[in-house]
Image 1 (tube, rainbow, N blue to C red):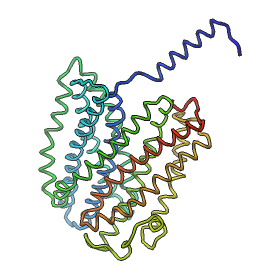
Image 2 (image 1 turned 60 degrees about the vertical axis):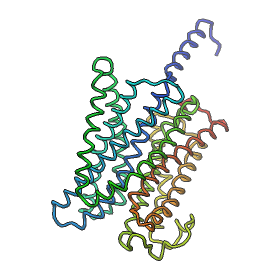
Image 3 (image 1 turned 90 degrees about the horizontal axis):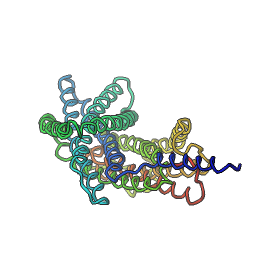
Image 4 (image 1 turned 90 degrees about the vertical axis):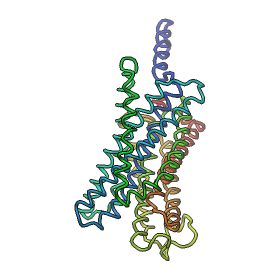
Length: 409
C-alpha cells in the first residue's frame, strides 16, 4: 500500500528506533559477562552434580551411623564450595582476558565487579545445588529409585536456573554500588575467597572427599577450558545480528545433551563399581568401542543408551513448542528449522553417548573414578558440541533462505 511522504518518514523513524532498541551497542566485556561467565558456571553445575552423585551414592550405603553419613554430606558440600569458588574466579579471569584482548582497554572497577559477581554466584549456587543434590539422592534411596536416572538431571536443571538467576541479581546489585559504595564489590569477592581455606579443612577430614580434593582439579579445570571454547563460539555467533536467535536455544540443546550423557555415564560407572575393581574391566566392555557396539552391543547399558537417544526428539519438540508459546526466538518454527535443529540435537547426543561408553571404561581401566573424571569432560564436550552444531545449523538455515524476521527476537 502506498503512503504519503509524512507517513513514510514516520514509519522510517519507528523502524530506526526499533532497530536501535533491538541491537544495543555492547562492549566485549559486557558480552563476556552476559555469555561466557553464565556459560561456565552453569556447566560447572552439571559437573559438580555428577561428582557429588558418585561420592554420596557409593559411600552412603556403606555407612550405618547417621553421624558418618552427615560427615560425608558436609564434606561433599565443603568440597563443592572449594571447587565452585576456584572455578568462579577462573571463569571471571577468563572473561576479563577475552574481553580485554579485542578492545585493548582494561577497566579495574569492571574487572572487580566481574570477579566478585562470579565468585559469589558460584558459591551460593553451588551450596543450594549441593543441598538439592543430596536431598534427591537420599530421597531416591529411600523410595527405591535409581539415583543415576534422576539425580543428575534434576540437580543440573535446578543448577542452571539458580546460577543464571543469582548471577543476574548479584551483578545488578554490585553494579549499582560502583559509584556510591565502591568498596562493596571488592569486599564481597574478598569475603567469599577468604572462606576457601575453611572449606578445604572441612573437606579434607573425610577420606572420600579428601581424595577428590587432591585429584579432582584436572577434569574440572580442563572442562572449564573446553566449555569456554563453546562460549567463544556462542559469543561470535550472537555478534551477527542475523543469528542472535541462537541464544534462546543454546541452553536447551546443551542442557538436554549434558543431562542425558551424565545419566549414561553414571549408570556405566555404577555398573563397574558393582561388578569389578578399579583397573580391571569386566569381560563385556573389552575391545574396540564403536557406535554400533554402544547402542546394539551385548553390554547391559546398551538399552539405556537406546532409550536416552530416543528421548532426544520428543524432549526437544516439547521445549521447541514451549519456546514457540512464549513467543521467543524463532517463533514461526518452520519445518526446515525443526528438522535441522533436531538433526543437530540427535547428532550431539549420539556422539556424546558413544564417547561416554569409551571414556568411562578408559578412566576405570586407568584406576581413576569415572564420575569424577568422565562427567566433567562429557558435560563440557556437550556444551561445545551443542553450541557448535547449533551455530552451524543457524548458518545453514540462513544460507538456504530460512530467514524469518523474528529469528533474532
